[in-house]
Length: 171
Image 1: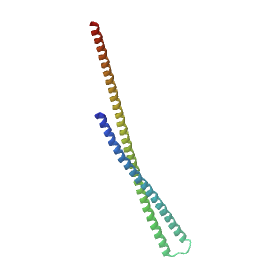
Image 2: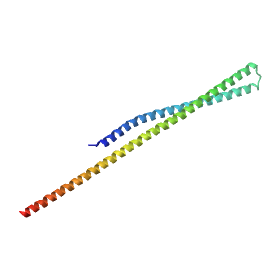
Image 3: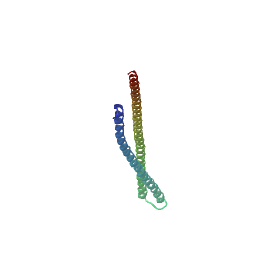
């Protein structure tokens, strides 16, 4: 039967193990959220790259326009296309920056969750070590007690024999 301190340590270790399961689940959620952030960032980069290409095409189209005959309406349309592509590019840059910031925050959250899991595992290991130490101490105490009891019994037997020998020698 386990002594109260050992039983208490086992209960604490079990509580930490249950907490560890919750921490593992939280870590998995944080990693999944990080993976989503990475995917969002990649999509935002692709949108930004598309916007940059669109802006470059709009500028090239306007430059080519001046190589041929053109009307003021053509120039106005080209300028509107450039303005639109510039706005799209700026918006894509903002979205990309937000995604990158979110990705960095989420990466930090993953590291925090990993640290929590690591600390919990270390606590469990410490509880296990304390349990093993308490069991070893209890076993050593029991062995010492058994040795003392065996010595006392041996002394008592020797004492009985010497008394029995002494009484039979007097009779």
